[in-house]
Amino acid sequence: MKRNNYKIIFTGGGTGGHIFPLVAIIRELKKIFPENLEIYYIGPKDNISKNYMEKEGVKVKYVLTGKLRRYWDFKSTIHNSIDILLKIPIGIIQSIFHMFLISPDLIFSKGGYGSLPCVLSGRMFQVPVFLHESDSVLGAANKTLLRFAMEVFTSFSDTEGVDAKKMVVVGNPVRKEILNGNREKGEEIFKLRKEKPLLLIMGGSQGSERINDIVLCVLKDMLDFFEVIHQCGPKNYDHVHAEANAIIPDKRTREEYHLYSLLSEEELRHAYVLADLVVSRAGSGSIFEIAAVQKPSVLLPLPEAAQNHQSRNAYFYSRTGATVILEEENLTPHFFLDRVKELFSPPMQLKVMKDNTDIFAKPRAAKIIASYIKEYLA
Image 1: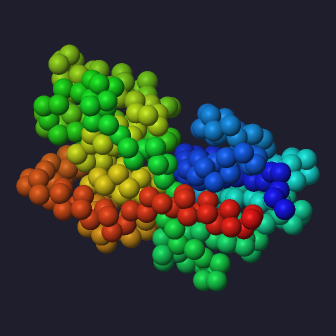
Image 2 (image 1 turned 120 degrees about the vertical axis):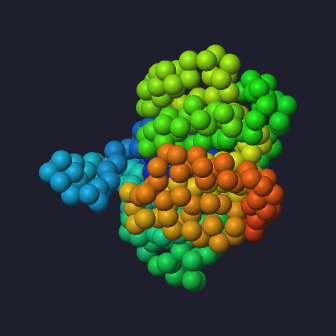
Image 3 (image 1 turned 90 degrees about the vertical axis):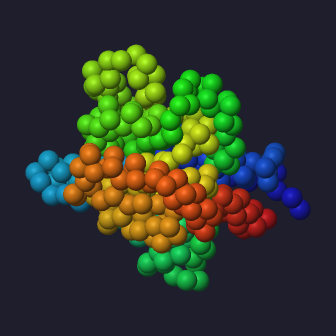
């Protein structure tokens, strides 16, 4: 006998790297369960989860969450104590309340500090849990929650610490909608001059101050060779905008620099199709998107990333020959620009890198996970 409806709770940390893959899975699930599916999101309150989840018709429930800071000084010790002793326990109590009212059939966790209260409270109600690990090394939250999971989906085949009986290697879910950009539409949106190769520079959904600083240091010289779309992050936009205007007072040159705080999904899909080269941090979400849209790339791993996971992600991907890695430790702005310019001479290098993205790309990850969920619920 068919069920009237199924209830699934999604949860994850509060960054685009956690939210965008969940959105990709939710969209695939809606195709499989067009009518009898109720979807909820429980996690920390932030603009990315609010904007994207509500657009998908997901019922959003916010709870308090805390995280463990791995750097030790007086300030971080105080913050850690507040989070561990106060915020996480309150978040678990809030999650228990939501869990009782929703009575879900399944919890799908993307990991991150924001997932802890939801998954821990779900286990009190014996709700089945599926986990996804984005990176090539287990995050702290997923290490804690691993024992509760029925299935653990991983992005990388060499993820350590996961029981082989539970592990399913699928890649990191990518929104299908960003794979079908249109060149003509993009040229219109970004008002491109189209006289030079196009660089797409991104620092993740939060932006990256250090990547912004590198770009600003060589921006005048960079624009002699390239047209640039630069996603700098919402908190950094005003500063970068003011600095860029001071650096490039010439109106014609300024028209070749397209600065955005955060690219919308619509803008991003067109930016990808237009880009000749993508410069990015090495979060798993960024790497799998870049591979899926078949773009050569330069990756700048974040040195402070937990357990050095961005470097590990980047070097795993670099085995394909689809990317160049520049470590920040000894990186100077002019070396960065020279290395980028070298990739265009001869241009055949970029063609080889583009062809090599196929080795790594897994654009069906979201569909495969949705199929697993359907099989379990059915």
